[in-house]
Structure formats: C-alpha cells, structure tokens
Length: 291
Image (cartoon, rainbow, N blue to C red; front, side):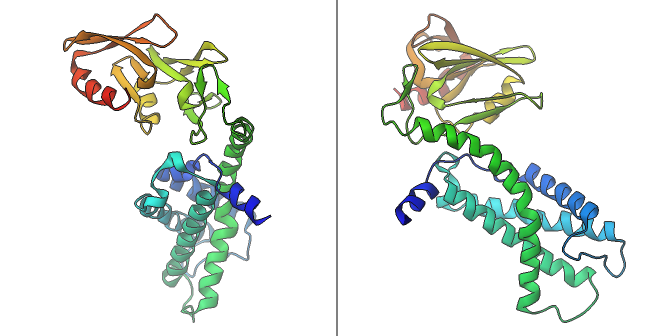
C-alpha cells in the first residue's frame, strides 16, 4: 500500500498553471479570493476598523497573493523544484502547500495594520490565518490541478507500456505533455515533445506538424510564432530556425547549405525548412548537442 502511494506521488505531472505563470497566477488568486469573499462572506470574515468590508477584503486578497510570486521564485531556485519537465504529483502538492503557508503568513501580518488592536501575537491567531489561506486559496489551485489530471489519465495509460510508440516516436517515461494555448480561449493543443516535427507561421495562425499514428498530422492554432516559441522555450531541442519556422532538431535527417543559410530535411518528409543566415551559428552549436 505504501509502495503504491509512493509510486503515485512520483508520477509525472503537468505543472500547475499558477506555479508555471506566477504573475498571472497571483492576479487570478487575488481576483478569485476577492470575489469569493465578497459574495459568500465565509469564515466569519468582517470589515476592518477603518475600511468597508469590500475594501478590507481587497487589501487582504491582493497583498496576501503577492507571496505566490515570491514563493514560486524561491521554489524554482531550489534544485528539486527547478525543472518543470521533472514535475511530479508530490512536487505539485508540496509547492501548493508552501505557497498557501506563505499566503497565511502574509494574512497574519497584514492584520496587525488593519484590524482592531488586540493580542494577535500568538500561535492560535497565526494558525487561524493559515487556515483561512488554505480553505480559500486552495480552490483556484485545485481548479488548475484538476484540469491537468485528465492528462495524467492519458499518460498513465500510455506509459504503462515500456515500448509504446505513437508514429515512429517512442514516448519516454520522462516526457510530459506540452500544452499550447491560443488567443482563442476555447482552443488548445496538446502533444508530446517526441511527436513534434515543426511549426510554421501562417499570418495570424501557426500550423503544427505532428507525427502521430505513423502519419504526419497538421494542427492549426490561432497565435503568433513568437508566442509559440516562448511556450516551447523549455524544450532545448526545439529551435526557431527562421522568422516563420520552429523545428524539432531531433527530427532533422539532413542539412544542406553554408553560412549564408541552410535547408533542412526532416525524417519522413521531403519538405525543406530554412535556417536563416543570422541563425546558422547558433543553429550549429545547438544541432551538435542532439546529433
């Protein structure tokens, strides 16, 4: 039983959106908590001595959300939490817990300035602050963790087979699904790094070419190539060769040209991908790492 729990906790997992994007995450938490507190008024919350209830809750929510940024920055400076591709359920739970404790500490000290003076310097008051942070702050974290859980179900099925392959690319146990966001709120694209061949900019859209089921499949999403490059930046073998192209260096089968520019051939396709003259030197260094 203990061994099963240990294996489950160490399963690969997508990093929580709030942790992955701490600045936007801080704003999400602040707005959510403010809306929740002003609508439902839970946990006997009340106004401060000099402010209305709404202003009091706004101060608590927006100041106590700041530790999210600080906590995430500190966590990412620690080797254990530094690599998003090595994220697990255990790391997710520990990170969320530490962030919520940070919010609880912030709530505890904010109260010294806006609440009615009293004997607040004690353990029970501190624990109450942490309790409020957990009971309310856990909701947005849980929401994003629940969204990622569907991918755990998918990868859990696929990674049970050691030699399971999609197309000609073997999905490694260390692989984590990539999620690409779009300017359209309801549009989203997910794939494994080993499935990605290249991406091509087409005006306000980006075409993704993915190797799935022994076929090259085209998926289109509304976004800029620069935004896609940023979203793929943590994969070292994804390289932007040209203003309109991002390529998986592990898929390159042939390179032709000189320092004025290259033409790349990819495995399983005759389509040529250009490498601009300005990119050749950087390309050569990166290409050697994966070939």
